[in-house]
Image 1 (tube, rainbow, N blue to C red):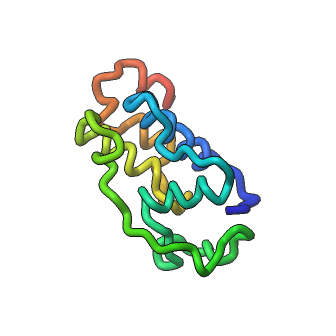
Image 2: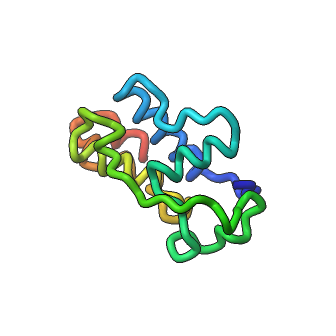
Image 3: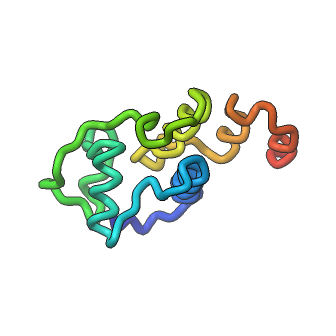
Length: 123
């Protein structure tokens, strides 16, 4: 939404989108342009509020009149993913980048517990 603050939380969002696409073999948010993309995100993840995401109203692309959607269950959009996988995906796709799971935390997530090399990347 026009943020100039790029950090690894943006990459985590991207990894979450790729993760969902690997599972379903289709994009989770197949937007045609920026506005369509945001609406597709909001329809699934819910429209973010200022209570949920401090500073959202200050972003250049924020509109006070965005359509309001309730968050949907990701299990309906990523069928076949285990509860642990859904939990990790949920944490990757949190609207507020400051509340999103970090790469280091994601590597420690129970969904990846049986991936032997995951811990090596944290050292």
